[in-house]
Length: 281
Image (cartoon, rainbow, N blue to C red):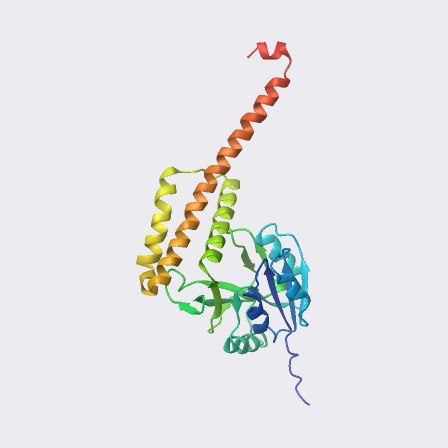
């Protein structure tokens, strides 16, 4: 009797975007081996949506961005396959990694999820240190065995019901297109972190406001060997420290706005009280 082989596992490539021209083209090309490619766009204004709409292999959906957890959870629901490869728009799957992904999901003893280490690119040159050398993320997993939560401050956390493995080949991450692009990204992350910390009840601290950005630069540039990336290391370490500075500055502003709104509300409430009640104060 012939032994029936297990059916080939199908894979969905999922991506979220907002103004990603210059990144998304390479990303889409690198996942063309997937059985379906789904992109959820947050109403891009730079031509990203138009590019995706006209791409023959892509299904694109527009959905307003609330936060990373909500957007990725929404995107995950669009997948028609259990195995998903979830990428950021500035990430690229190499040929060797593509082969490893296909082999991995078709193993009978495959884990429920897999971590990817990433190779960071400064424009088109590798960034080997500066705090990024041990960075890894869940990118490949079974939809039925995982979900996103906002346990982290800015980026989402993937909660896996089962075991996680680590793939050998690295994902290429084009983190730095140009100075202004990365600066804006770091400012955005800093503000998001501040909002999350504010909602979690954390308060502004002048000491941390001064020390934390300096420590971030020192830690990444010296302890994490950013100086070995030469000028690239200085730029990346400075902008990452800037993100920390923005976080505490924005937290201060949020607290100030909240205090002002609370006092204004109190004044309005007091002004509406009857004169007899006001006299009792």
